Length: 178
Image 1 (tube, rainbow, N blue to C red):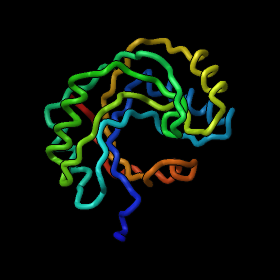
Image 2: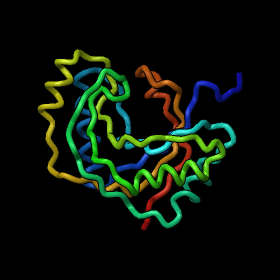
Image 3: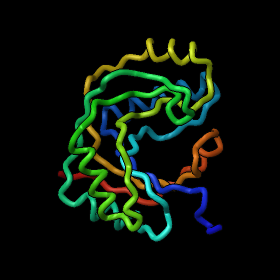
């Protein structure tokens, strides 16, 4: 087993203001209310393995010429998956899918990744009724979100606990100038 087994290198889009602060406040409030981890609001658009990857180089090359992304909020949802306990679902976006394919092409692993554009608000095992009630109660003062930065993060895999979320380590970041 290599030193990197059980790890992934995830690439995130980060929301611009005012959404960034709004989402961070919701995440902090839910974390305090339900004893869950606090994390940076993000949308995962590509995942690979950390072996043989230079995250900064991959970000720089794959984002060359990219423009910030505007994604429409579809709904607030919940699921049984720990990593999708309660989340904002965005509408599919062809430019975002193209970005994932660009990362795949430039990645050392060329690993395929199907983008499901969502932004998690809490990572916590909870009753379905609690999650449904939260999903129905959450509203945002905007319909679309601008994402203007990207980050590479090394994470344990799979992410199934608070400790895994708290172990995330940012290893690269870049603004999307467009």
